[in-house]
Structures are given as structure tokens and as C-alpha cells.
Length: 443
Ligand code: PLP
Image (cartoon, rainbow, N blue to C red; front, side):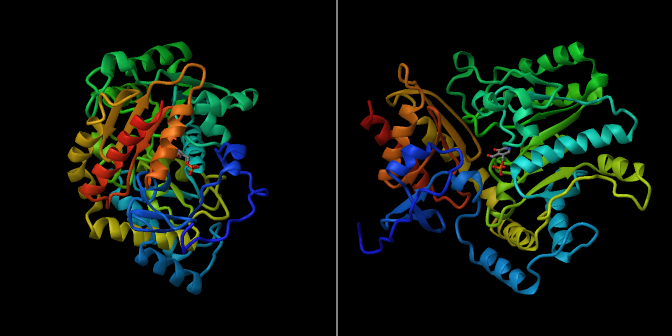
């Protein structure tokens, strides 16, 4: 332990989320500080953040302007009720978010997380159909391997078996799933969007025929699926989903909790792919993850329909959170959006994506590598699983990288890299070189 070491806390009381608690507590790993591209560990080591925390710290850590905006706001107005009262920063944050959404998706509902954004989007879709006299449209179509957080709505439309099985008897009724788009045999080692797979969107026609369009409210997908292990949409796939939804009056919801705010080199994946959904869910990068905040961006007709269907003095949507547009989170959002814009970080991500792709695919042929997938500043490296011990290889690579000073993320045996958009070219090389060394070091 070096001179900067801090005393370790007692780990008993905390039930850690999405963590192997016993494994962690037997050998804890603490992050105690952060700045720019780096974390500091409890024993004083600097660790390059290859994952933007959890895909969220897009402008790098501890940005002074954001910290100051939060501090200023907490002195001026710490909290204001958002129900039947407003505070200026909430409206300012909404206007600023609306400005970088695809044209027309400029009505913003604030939540506190991606999970809440997903559930809110589903509720808004139901409210919209009901307001226009089609309340029988109650079904949702998600996708296998989709991740939409951990609320009951989100896990119902989500498609990760492990997140669903314990709760399976209590999931939302009326949900069906599209097939996921990963096929390593057909499209392994694709650089950017795979050429194979657009036809998988046509399965939506089959599902619509099965249930009848008149019973379906909407379709929710991540335009690029992150948490499940980086599944990049095949060329033409999202366009087909859009066309089928439009044909049948289904709302298309893009879950952009990971992809918005520059991850692909544009403000949204929608802008990047040139495919416009009706609703977009947001969180994470919205304020550089400095204060919990999520949001749902909705197109004007949806907002107008729901609002105008109610009496002028009635609440139109019976939904909201004590902390919707919390002043600190809203102030942090304005400050973060200022940084993204002033520093041109979305453009920076785009300009680095070619080098990022090269560096990722240079690992082709490294031990255990089964597939490499990438887009923008996201890469997934899928490893061969060990017989009878799935996930153990991913975990060991994660540990080895951490020892070597780079934080990577792993989902079972898929590694994911998604650094802050301020990453330097040499740091990109370091991240992938470290993964390469770790792969060589493990059986
Ligand atoms: N939706 C997507 C696409 C996500 O990637 C995530 C989190 O990774 C969520 C929703 C859930 O967000 P949160 O953890 O803030 O609830």
C-alpha cells in the first residue's frame, strides 16, 4: 500500500447492486477519487477509465464547471416540488435537452434513472393511445437481449433471461419479443454495422400479424444494445423497424440511455443512424452522471394528444417522481451540455471512432477472442467461454486489466469498452493493448 492509502470501510451493511457480493467482499476493490480519464483506487493507483464509469461519464470525471453548477444551485435552491410548482432550472434543462434531440422530439419528461425512463416511456405510450381512443393498444414488443433497466416494465420488455427469471410470474402481461440481432457465424468481426441481418426486423410483421396491430402500443429497442454485450444494429435494420411501426401505428421507442450524448459521435443514435423514433429514453450522460437524472423525449403529437385529451384544469398524466428535474440534477445537466457543446465532444467521439475501431479489431486473433464488434466509441470483445464456467474468463480479464491500470466492463464473457469522449489516442491504444496482455495472461 502506498502513502496515499485510505482506510477501508466495513463492507457488511451494503447490499451491492449487480455484484457478486461474497466474491467482492472477500477481495474488495475501491475507487476513492477521479479526475478526467482516471480513477484513483484506495491504494493510490491510477486507473484509466475505459468504461466512462457505467457508460455515463462522457465528459470525463469531476468536471469543475459541473461541480460548481451543482454547488451554486444547492446554495440557491436546494429542492423545489415539481408537482404543480416549477423552478427555472427544470425548464432550462428541458429546453437544452430538447434542442439536441431529433427535430420534433422536443417535449421532455424528467425521471431519475434509465430504468424510470423506460417505464415512463411505456406509460406515455399507453396514455397516448388511450387519449386518442385506442386504449386497447396495450401490448409492447421488446427484443431478446434488450436491457431497459430493472423496473417491472423494463424487465418485461427487456430480454436478458437472468434479469427476468426470479420475477417471471410478475412481469407485465402482453409483451412479445423480437429476435436479437447477433449472429457471429454470419457477421462476426464486422467493423461498424454488420451487412447481415436487416431481415430480422421483418419478424415484427409476424408478431403484428399474430397479435393484430390494434392491440399493440409500441416497440422498444436499444438502437445499439450495450449492456448485453454490444450488439450493433445491422445495416438497414432500424429503418425497417421504423417503417413497420409507421405502417401499423405502433410507437417506436429508442432506449438511448447509453447511446445518447455522444457515444456514437452524435447527440443521439437516432441522429447517427438517421432513423427517428417517436420517443427516446435518456439518462447517464445527460449530466455526465454527476447527479442521478433520466429523461424521456417525446414527439410533439404525443405530448399534444395526451395534454389536450384532459380537461384544462386536470392533471393529464398521473405519473412523476419527487425528484423529477431535481434542481441539482437540472443545473448539472445545463453545465454538462455546455461542456459537450463547447468542447465539441460528440464530434470528437466521431473523429476518434476510426482509430478506436482499428485498435479494437487489432485484437482479432488474440487468445480466446470469438468476436469483436464496434461503433462510435463502443467496442465489445466476445470471448470463448470455459466449459461449464461461463463468465469466469470475462471476470479474470477484468481483474487483470484492473491490476494493469485499466477499467474495462464485462458481461459474462463479453468485454465492453466505452471510454469518456475526452479519451486521447494514446489512451485508446493503452486500453486495447492492456486487454491484449490480459488475454495472453489467462488460461
Ligand atoms: N436502458 C439502457 C439501454 C441501459 O443501458 C440502462 C443501464 O445501463 C438502463 C436502461 C437502466 O438505467 P439505470 O441503471 O439508470 O436505471
